[in-house]
Length: 289
Image (cartoon, rainbow, N blue to C red):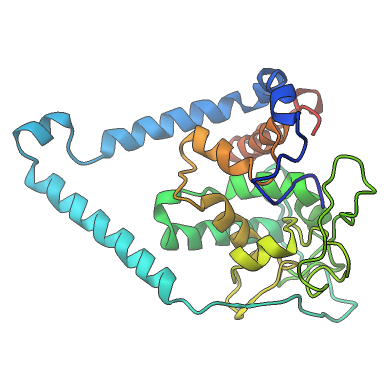
């Protein structure tokens, strides 16, 4: 199922977190810029927060109160909007063969244009529905790069549907390092009975997809194979639990949900940084997952 596991409570490689902790300094060499960017962003946000400790002691400024009320109302409005949005139908849509590959300009770091469109669309929706998560499209792109190389180099049509369905290996225990996961969807999403396998360009297990499924392109369907749906669902998955992606510790915690491996985190953050800054991580700087 790609290079990740979708059940956070299970330690995928039981020694991975401890064993790979020693690799993190080297693996995160390409991610140092991300730490700097994250620290600067956090400092900038703190500087613009209304009020400070002194204000709380002597009485908050009227302007600070007004700004706080406005932000609170904004968040409440976003939450209400999310709650009233109808749930999409969860399914994989059968598509015609012979569809043409999307022809969009390539984005930063060589990310296919259709993938950039899907990641940025997810960023915009999440900014409206979950503004406290602060999800950047570059983080979603980092996940997409590691999981499927952005749907195998952008092999998708103009609607974000892959020209061929994307599946991970069957989780029947035959592949070393992977868990055995018996069927949870009757083959409805992954096309298999007996065992599960990861599905779509963001590589979700069927059970996890069903729980977080989101409709990124507004067609009323949450299809794990569709880039727009998959990117938005990945964002929801990472943001779950009130995590803030501007906090690198919380971002790392979110990424570990995909794969309980610090080497995986290092790779995702390295690509995230490359897409945000225009730098290119060297293969030798990335620890093996």
